[in-house]
Amino acid sequence: MMDQDETQARVEWQAERGGRVIWLSGQDGVEISSLIARAISDWQQAGQRVLFTDLSPLAVCGAAEHPETERRVLERLLGPDIERARATPALWHRFERILLADGRSTRVILDRVEAAGARGRRLVATIRHQVTRHGATLVVVAPRDESVRSRVLAAWTDLEVGSVSDGGVVERAA
Image (cartoon, rainbow, N blue to C red; front, side, top):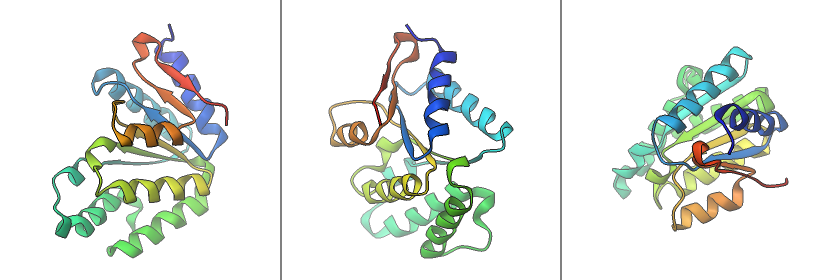
């Protein structure tokens, strides 16, 4: 059984390699939340740039609202790094500039990926493409189940962390 320190060390090792996707697939709760909080704190103390967003707003948007919701998700992801960008294309450009400038020292965390649904699939795929292309690290948080989303995440993932208390860590050679 792997403890939380060992899990954290594996997450950090993958993140240091750059261009990696780490999937936290355990059940939503204190265990995963504390792992994320600890990682964010450690990365920020080490001078890494951390971009975080919750994708749950995508679960409630209609087709007509999707572009607006995509813009809001990007605004949250960029946080204080947003500068003057407000339109969706400008936000994507700002995101790419951050990745170009900081690349391997950037950690992008997408929480509640399961809430993105089919409409958010393109958004998640685009973020993943940009992050891995520029050598940053993507951390996705979503439970494992029998959905297409889980199969796609499994194919993308370099490290999967399930329930830490059950020793649920799966690493793939990359």
